[in-house]
Length: 197
Image (cartoon, rainbow, N blue to C red; front, side):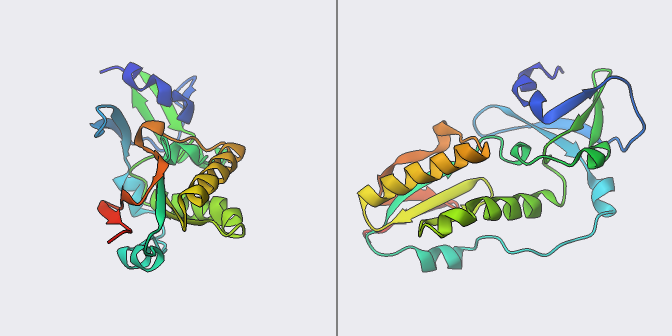
């Protein structure tokens, strides 16, 4: 197998000129729902040595408490979400793998690292904080975001503010998986939400 199907992901990795010392993990790919491939490191050995952190993620109960009757929705999906969070250079040596005779190391959060969901969630919470001060209601579950507003016009306005803010932070969206047009019915968190019922 070649890395070529994943060439667009290489920005998240660094080709090492030689096999420096470091912590090497097994590398493999898994199919994505869209037909693409997701690179994964088998980080079980590294994960067993990491401290565990408790953190809160979005829950169904919180979503239900935020959705109001007649709300309008916009959904945003981040492209290659974990890879958008950089790894400190001195920690990258723990995220190495060999493939096809070459050595690589991740520069962004990999799938399979026990700390990735917590780290990503905390980074996105910090990224979204300025929007809360603008009274924009946005719920984030990893790479899936839901914007809620009282009117269609407000939902469109908030969508535009969020997208400009994301661009200013260098965050990329996956337009194929976003629903940019405000609607009162959407799918989020694996559930169909309808604010008219």
